[in-house]
Amino acid sequence: MEILLIVIFVLGYLAIAMEHSLKIDKLIPALAMMAVLWALIAVNHLQVFDVVPGIGKEPHHLEGVLLHHLGKTAEILVFLMGAMTIVEIIDYFDGFSTIKSFIKTKSKSKLLWLFTILAFVLSAIIDNLTATIVLITILQKIIKEKETRLWFAGLIVIAANAGGAWSPIGDVTTTMLWIANKVSASQLIEHVLIPSILCFAVPTFIAARMKIFKGYIEPEAEDGLASPKYSSLMFYLGLGSILFVPVFKTITHLPPYVGMMLSLAVVAAVAEFLSNRKFTVSDAGEDSGSHHSPVHKSLSKIEMPSILFFLGILMSVAALESLGMLFDFAGILENNVPYLGTEHASTKISDLVVLLLGAGSAVIDNVPLVAASIGMFQIGTDEPAWHFIAYAAGTGGSMLIIGSAAGVVAMGMEKIDFVWYLKKIGWLALVGFLAGAIGFVFIRDFLLNVVH
Image 1 (cartoon, helix red, strand yellow):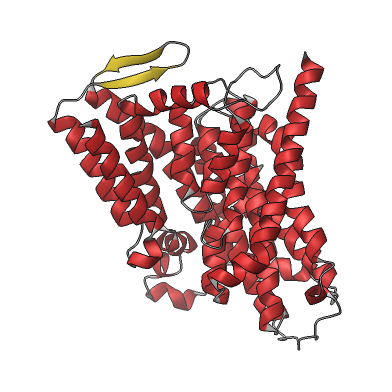
Image 2: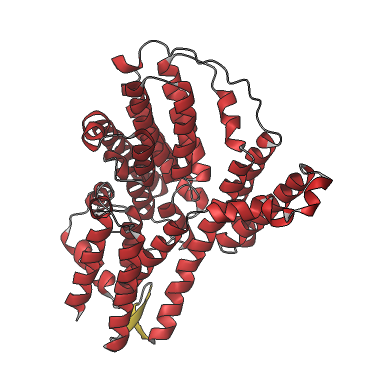
């Protein structure tokens, strides 16, 4: 029966990876896989376990295990829904137009650095997908030449994925590790920030010296439209409210989604107040309460397909975890793959395994890869391996255009060809990925040597 479950999981995984070829949304195989796996476990009365750190597999009742995994998954989904809604409220007030005021230079190389730095910083706050959409939208208004714009978009993808890797709120995978108490915000930043900077700065440094980034862009005529009222206010309030979440968790020790709900409540209250001020008494005859509500509008625009996909894939991985399969597989890896790190390291998870996980995230979705890692490796909070997994899973997807959400959205917005990206940008992403990995290992081994 376990072989059948693995076959179903692999087939579902392949359907997700081949989403574009099959032309079906990846949430469909994810949800179907989740339901079938848990149904087979229930119908066949398979023994399920809780994995207790330091002890191993403990038998448990199916209902309790299912509720436990659903609760952990719901924490992530509620957190993401809150963050998505805040971003949509910012967009409702056209808050992201504020970013355009930062762009003054016409030099291509300086523009490249400006856009990649903005992508790196923004993605750490509002996630790499949204940062990519915002910056490519601005890019399309500034640069007319298609070929030049494709190169900019490719480097933005690398920088956005690097920016999401070091922040607990910057990427779904780092959020998962943070909510699962595998990493703390401060330690994640301390260990992964510099490798992430190397990951985007090295490719940007190389690219800025290429012929395509020599010279200046042709100045565009100004559209003459002023930024909408309150756009800057909502931009800074929204970003500040998201940044407040790790602070709230540190102070209260409550799960991150609680802080995100508080931030959403504050942003929504300000948005409703400002929105009501914009309309006159003549609107009172209409159903203005719902029609003009920025909160209602923003909630209707959040990506529910992504939320349902995360539900399906996380609960599918949880099904295998509940049977003890991931725990057993982790033991095989630890015993058979050589460890390449320092002798002082407290964990035997091989650097090679983590690097392969990063490379794998360029081919298949990094969310299930990290979910599987959380289920496999029973090591303590802030072990170096968790930080390395956060880095590798977050940045490895840049090597292929379909390897990350940021890459896929850039592909759609700019019609980037898969082979073009592989030839022109893929090698730069690989160089950045390896530079950051080397930097991470150096910093980790240096810190461990200092400690010991």
